[in-house]
Amino acid sequence: MDILKQRIASEGQILPGNIIKVDSFLNHKIDVTLLNTIGQAFYERFKDLKIDKILTIEASGIAIAVITAQYFNVPVIFAKKGEAKAMLDQVYATKIHSYTKDTTVQINIAQAYLLKDEQILILDDFLAHGEAVNGLIDLISQAKAKIAGIGIVIEKGFQDGGSSLRAQGHRLESLVIIDGFDETGFNFRE
Amino acid sequence: MDILKQRIASEGQILPGNIIKVDSFLNHKIDVTLLNTIGQAFYERFKDLKIDKILTIEASGIAIAVITAQYFNVPVIFAKKGEAKAMLDQVYATKIHSYTKDTTVQINIAQAYLLKDEQILILDDFLAHGEAVNGLIDLISQAKAKIAGIGIVIEKGFQDGGSSLRAQGHRLESLVIIDGFDETGFNFRE
Image (tube, rainbow over all chains, first blue to last red; front, side, top):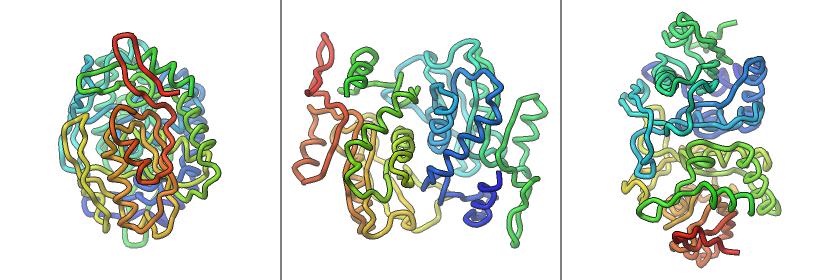
């Protein structure tokens, strides 16, 4: 996805800990025109599948999920972090570790919104070690729903989340894969 | 907005502490068709204004902001809660209290994304005591940007956030105002 590579090349920043910061267009300030192009790209890659719902995780994933859901015409559910007073339902829960924030948090989904045998498309902004995606897969498994596919905006190809998910047989589509970077810039996979 | 009143009447739940729960279509599972109708409604109400950016707060506000931003063709910024390692920029920060979660959290916006004299439309899902909106107003003031308007999906008219913001002269548009509820249902303002 050339337009996304160009934005990463021109605006992406590298922070300590191999964090790739794209706050200027994807996950703090959001370029909604680009986001729509991302949503259309996910639709092109998964439109052959029957999708019942899109599942993501707060917060950055929500923008990507709702824009993409317009093309599939399906609802979105987002896993919530921590425990909210307003969420007194029976939930599916699991724990995930964030390497970016160096914290482990519980994520939850109300059981009523993830049903047995539903075909679920997982979407998220980044894939690195795969902690968030594996947490969502855990929730889907608890619900006895099905993983139709996994769509990622930016995969860090130099970390093991993507290769591990592909080895497990998941249909993983990353719009851009970054295999590394140095002082001259990002090394995108062709 | 009749379609929204109908959904609240049929699916909304009251939790202790006057919490109105609309998790089944607005802030956990999201009905993206309804969300588009909400985005169009905000556009109709604010299209006479010059809007440079839409500002909201994670997490539930993000869905509303990005869908609405498509109609205005402007970027979204969302205030982040807490402090993330990936956010090393200079930030505008303030503290807000969540009555729903009974916690006080810091919210932040990178200074680079909120500029002097920009016309900002604030959007959020709920307005009760006005803590979140007043926090966003504080961030806008720190940036010397301008508050063009405030759009709320569901205002709790029996709490003081809305009347206080109107008394301050803000242009506040709430798609639905709930003035109270009892065992027979919700009392919507006409």
